[in-house]
Image (spheres, helix red, strand yellow):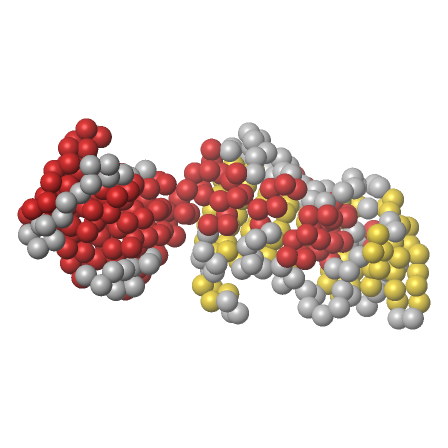
Length: 327
């Protein structure tokens, strides 16, 4: 319905308010007018209630705030009509309006079945918006909902950055809208630290893996400071050749055979204390430092082995699956 018809209906409803004993002021504002229409959802006359419903339907998103209040009010008649109107907006409006209406329905405590349905629809809408944004930026996004033994049903997001990726952060900002986001996996070369800034506020995140690109130790440190339970792995061209268990102290649990670490004499039980003079306190930070260097680069490690402190110079190797990582 166009704006002229909506304005006409609004005028008619204000006149209908007079019939119910209400006298609108001549200088009534738009918000006051909408409030008057919402009040008429509980009018004595059925015709007035119907006209108010029709006018509010025509007004659309401008009425969402007042309808949200009405959906939680004492009058069941007004609440029921407000919920119906909000539900209409979840399909009538654009994506932004649909989201606003669904979020409003989440507050309709008197209608638990409506809340439950709105929650599912909002999750689907946010996922669709997120996928579309990654595609618009030249990438792709796959969202799944696996079962995690500690957290239950969670959300995982797999991001592929194609050759046309626009190196923008807007798409990564949308990940914050995904429910219970637990795991993010990112593959591709066209990647910047600034994209990961958007993940700092996602407290549910537990696993982050970046493959085929470098990530600075600075952003890794920032992510870990904001979310100590987050485990980060960066896999670029270069490799050192050590593994560890993501629990307890940062101690090497395994050294890959014929790797740079093995050639340098690193052993299970060793702790890498410094990488080129910079203190290392986690495997997450180690992978970030390694990702900053090309294969063949010589780096200096300080190793703690029991009570000993050892100095090791290691030439970083190349990952065998670099081509696969960058496909």
